[in-house]
Length: 196
Image (tube, rainbow, N blue to C red; front, side, top):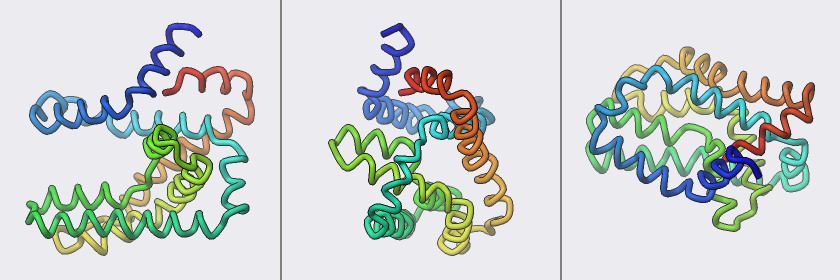
């Protein structure tokens, strides 16, 4: 195992700690991160590209093998998370910009972090990956619609722009990752070892 793989394994094993650590930094010292605001979309695109590199046909097999379980997970994902976000925004009487941000996060697909958490908690990773994959694929439609519905009272939501951004930052990089893995399987599989 080389140094990159060791670093990747370390980050993967301590992922929860890093999330909490950076969340605290972001909360108590947000000025440290303001300069990196323009990095968010490209970095998310890189993460989604990496997700595309790791996807296999087995990830989607569960969709056909256990469609009911996947459907319950996806529907629950797009009902429970946005519902909790909306309830928190109301209960805490958050300022409009914070309320919309909380609701936006609640309406986004789960991404790779949920797969890591499912793995670490010894959950059904195959089902989790399938739910995450399906929720990511329908995100360009579900996220703008839900954000507009739930956050529209606080500010005007540009659903077309949100749709375009999700396609650019999420769907296109995932598809590119899948294409690269298909065309350059050996190299892609070697590079995946370096991903946390």
